[in-house]
Image 1 (cartoon, rainbow, N blue to C red):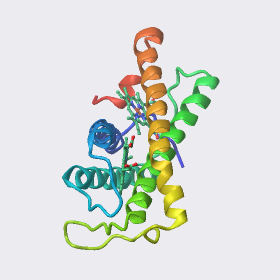
Image 2: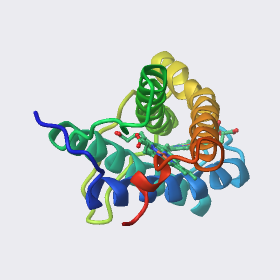
Image 3: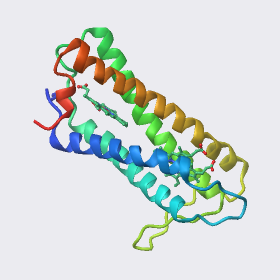
Image 4: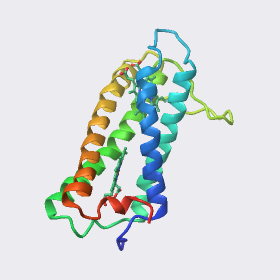
Length: 176
Ligand code: HEM
Ligand code: HEM
């Protein structure tokens, strides 16, 4: 498929929406009350789950959109930067997906049935209390820290492009 030379509006809107949602999702995750056995999700946890499911939906949409609207790397990038940026971008997609999905496993492990506001029930990913649920749900915290680290690398790279290389890479993701 012919690659476009610039990100379109949809790619940019999804990129910044996901970034903004993650910026509120992490603090909610850290600040919400700890879970105890048999406890039902409180308001903060319900909000965390809703935002997490929206992030999961957007990241899947973003990857599907990317498949049909591929964008070529910036001309200014030497081969090593093309390779490292593509690797970090795939790591970001993978870690957002893994963090959200492991959170869903955690919720299923706790026996929480998730539903949409329309009342449609979402699949239960594992039986309550199952060993698999404990294991995959247990990855949620580690996946979150891994994601935060990858975001840090990504943002440092963006700052380096803007203020040290002084090229137009960051402009590619901003409104024209
Ligand atoms: C990419 C999206 C998500 C991010 C960045 C995220 C981040 C976090 C963070 C930082 C914590 C606190 C971990 C700690 O105790 O240090 C947490 C806890 C939790 N999250 Fe998420 N989360 C996401 C999506 C989800 C989703 C989709 C669900 C459920 C459907 C979920 C369910 C939970 C649960 C049940 C906990 C409590 C786990 C515990 O107490 O150990 N999360 N999350
Ligand atoms: C202040 C925060 C951020 C800045 C300044 C920023 C900047 C950028 C820029 C300039 C690009 C385009 C790079 C290129 O031309 O190839 C990009 C792409 C990307 N960003 Fe960010 N970003 C930020 C936050 C995030 C966050 C939180 C995520 C987490 C998911 C993320 C995920 C991605 C991904 C996956 C791509 C690759 C897009 C693609 O080609 O498929 N970014 N970002």
